[in-house]
Every structure is written in structure tokens, then in C-alpha cells.
Length: 274
Image (cartoon, rainbow, N blue to C red; front, side, top):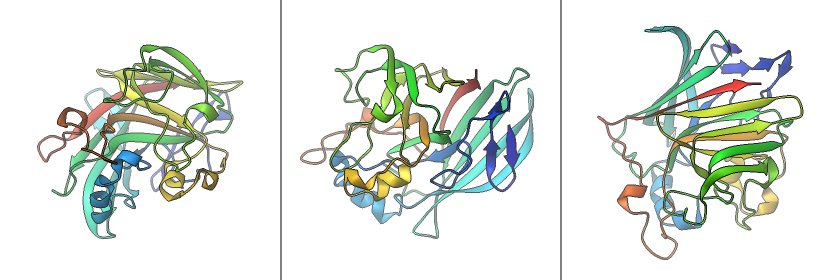
């Protein structure tokens, strides 16, 4: 693994083969935090508020990448700020990489509230753009169809496989799609390598697509999302439910994200390459 103090994780190799997309479409390398999602039809009215505070355009800005000392030794910390409306500091995220002697990496992701305006968050998680060679995905969680915390009865827990290109549903109007919830373990697979993600303490949501979050945010039609030769992989600790806000209420309280000044969002997972 190679880290750059101005860019974060820039290289991940196994047996001499690069596993990351070193020229990511969204321009950010390594495991990058995110708060937004491609707006759902059922986000129709909530998105008005998100746009008001600039959440849609608040891409994470890397502020720090440095070696830290912890109770179990040294680790790498990356710190990001989310800025809305160009000047409004909404939240600060840290993504820590704790690497053991066998090459297994623990990721600790944390989001701290900075502005009282950050209510009704769509999600909090991290994504990473991997090499286009990772054509398939496997997971142990809810499937085989996309699902959310309030939209899951059709998706029993089990072990599933999917081509990366088939994870998302091809909605005519592009939106967040392909989320798999309550995942304990997942992987992306190429001909010569496999990257395995495992939950710590609680399951995560998993997704892998040949398109990126920035593409989803900008697209008006499915034709606006070409394959950009990347595998955009999301490991989310917190995901807002769907609700029915296109014609009714938003998600009920238990399907929203409880985030406060004294209650940051935190979750962890491991990954390793085989």
C-alpha cells in the first residue's frame, strides 16, 4: 500500500498487480467517505432540503493524511471535510487504516457533526474505485435484489453472486440502485485476485457498480451513464430508508440516521486481497 499525504491511498498491490483504479473517474483515491446518494424517486421532497444546504455538491476534501500512534501501534489517518454552498462546513470524517503484519487492513470510519443543518442524511459510508478487472461480486447478506432497511422483505439473508454490471437496476431515471443490506461479508473478484470485506460488530450495506456516485448525481437519463472502466465499491455503515415521499411520507424514524453533536456515526470493517 502506498499513501500520498495530499491524496491518501494511491496504490494497493498484490503480487505486483495494481488493484486500485489509479485514475479514478471521481478524482479521489482510496477509501473516500460519502454522505449523498443518487436521489431516489422517494427522496423527491427531502432532496429540496439537501440541495438547500448544498449536500448534493459537497464532495469530500482531504485535509490530512498522516501516521498516528494508537494503542496497538501506528496507523494511517485520513481526514476529510464536507463543505456545502462552497463555505458551509457540514461535517468532518476520518478514515483510519490499521494494517496488520499479514496485510489485512481494518478501516475505522467516523463522521462528526459540525453544522446543525446536517439532519436527514442520506447515508454515511466509504467508497473506493477499484480496477475494471473486478467483474464479479459475492456477498452474504440480503439479496438477490436491491434492498433497504424498510424495503427488504423480498430479500432473504443468504449467499449471493452477481456480475458487477448487473448489481444495479437500470432505472430510466438514474438513482441510487443496487444496495444490498445487512451484509456480513462481501467480495469483488477478478480472474487473478479477490478483495474480501468483512463486517466488524455490525453488518454493512454493500454495492459495486461500473459507474460512480458523481455520474449518478448528474445523470438525467440512463443513457447518461456510460461505463467508465471502474468498479465503484461502496461499504456503508448507515443508509437512510426509502420511505414513500414521492407520494407520501418519508421513512419512519427507525429508518433514518440518528446523527448528533454528541453522537457521531462510527463503523468498522476489514479488507484483504487474495
